[in-house]
Image 1 (spheres, chains in turn cyan, green):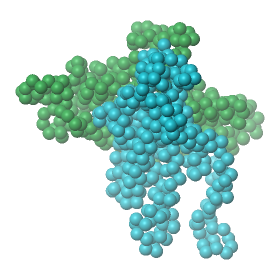
Image 2 (tube, rainbow over the protein chains, first blue to last red):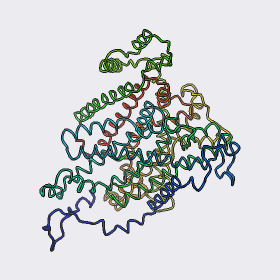
Image 3 (tube, chains in turn yellow, purple):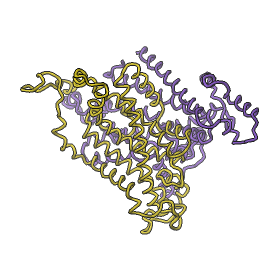
Image 4 (cartoon, helix red, strand yellow):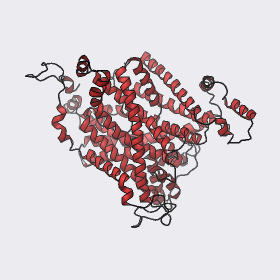
Length: 313
Length: 316
């Protein structure tokens, strides 16, 4: 048994205070260290990568003005000054296509995580605040969704709905919803047990007001971390689905799709297989770094994390 | 304990039933009549022909009836027939399963064999150059898409060694060497993600365990540092590895689909994908349920093992 087990519970400090000594009270320990914790090299590296990715997705096409779908040069060129990342099997500029791919991956990431966030918040809040039968029913549904590995479920849903990007986003959103629902529910249950919720209720706050003013702000931190981590999962899954032909459809450029068509030219023009994969890896790494850093800053309780739904139990 | 195991086992049954219902209806509620798709948009097909096809496929009657028929024959080991080549689905799956199992086992073996020592080294030499390289490498490892890694490995071996793995599957009992040379690159590709997680997990638990009183006691009474690390600390640090490996078995069974396709291995994931593209619903249903079964029971076994390995964790 470690010494930590004997730590006393957090008690109100002695002395003049509107809370009696010995009572449970919120002690704002975080505030003191807030700025110290921003010294987080991994988190900052992640923020820079993510920021750069967003910038490229939004403004890249104005800086590198070649059309990603236009046949601008001879086929399968090596990288050169005119085409820094070379050209593909039809003579399209790879850099322009990578930039378009950044836009696609960001869109897919934001929309599918948005779907999961909205559904997860709704499910988690309903389960956590109403409790009882609604809770156990909703959590059974979540268990069901957790009973299949994520990529398989995404492949099956996207495949059955029909291969296009909208369906891929729906599939990814559905697949990552349970993780959000669980974290939200857990947070809600924890917050609902705190005395300030009881006080608010005693003062006559409505149910909605308690959820909106007291519960939501208190579960924001873990949810923000989750958003960052699942953005990486969503981007990775979209790339996988597009690689399989279940996501963004050619001729539109997407990183997964580019990797897929590059396979046939692996021997002749390996650069085609290298750049899109590198782009995926860097962006996913950025979101993972950012998630790691945000976790240290916002929610020290969650501990070290590695991508995926592993430790959201 | 037996009661607990039994209860946990029984608790998986409603989940399996739920999953099978979800999959069954997902396949049926799709836009378009399966029969029309099957007959290939053949406009001349008469109503009679369509009805005949429906009967053959077990698509007559209400949905609950259909589900009941499918589920009861499924439990008897009759998975139906493929729409495409009328091969029994059970035969398709029993051909595919050993391939995926071999791939997953090899991949996890690589992950554990390299991940555990790297994690231990990282923890023991905390904040050394090795530790930083391992930590950053670990984050890269979870960020690298396995299908890209597979492509890079193919590129690397063909450029440097002029060698490409054989692209037609050879069973291990026919030619073990050919078989292993075929599996080594795909196994490497799927191992990296797990390797990175195992490494990070071992590092974190090792650091925790090394700070415990009993480790200090062991050192204080004169046990050598090496022995303390390998006998006292490592044993406890390995417990979370069991969880990860069990969890990854379930994930990788279907999750290595893309790698299987790249290397031309006709495993479960590959079969499932082909079935989806061919709208071969009996195969989709059976393969998905099979993957769910593996996933659920792998997780259950891990949960139960965890309690055995670490008696501090209460079973209730």
